[in-house]
Length: 378
Image (cartoon, rainbow, N blue to C red; front, top):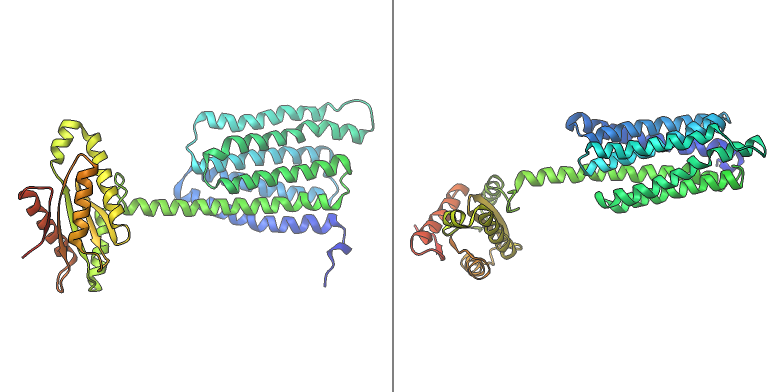
């Protein structure tokens, strides 16, 4: 069995961590790049660019570490790449959830510009002490600025995105990595191996959480796209196409289902006298009541205009009783009433015919007094 501790930590630590980062970052670059190619969203472009830069930084850092050059100008370049990558990653995360305006770019790129300003201290090391101490002190402002970036991004971005727990975990890990780096560099001259391990492996955990954040965001978007394709935008109940599809599915299985068809009474008059805003509000209220009543026994859909329908799939619920409960609640809780009709499936009926029968029963309720429930009868 290989004992890694027999080899210098400077060899196996960076190599192992970099190999893991290579796999994670390559997967994320493929996902974000593919998403940008198909959807052309700015967030995917920013994420792809920042991930490529993060991968390049990781490989450069491995090279500098292996060749003993992670100091001087290489160390300075390492810090600057770290800042740029960190800011661009956070820009990408922000854009995954929010539209970006010019002021947002100015904010994020301004953070990089400030880093460039702070980095000027590198070229003017303090006098006194050894050259090594002077070099360390010259890079201290930039090292401390990374902490400022962590707190700024955590404070500003967290409330504006989803998956806040993952993002906060990323910021905490980045803080821990930077702390381990500075303690090891400034207190132990880079020779404390546990801190060195933390400095190399914490970014692996950070990248893993970033991977899941990106993956979960893709899943969220896919679910949102699917949901919007089957629901009505105003009432949030199912649209006509999806409702017809579900009715046909149950009919093909010869299941005992019923369709309840409702129409808001005097809806045109409501729109004309109180405005379309009030009409929309009443549609939403009626749909909400129907959803509450049919939640465990069927599905609700908007069939068109002020027409709302229910597919009752629970054979233990009587359609007449459900329709009457809905009608009564709407009369008591809103400023409108509804006329409702229903029809129950019988062998030989098609889905379209079953819906048409319920529609005819509703029309009969509407033409014989309104605000009532009528059962279809041939």
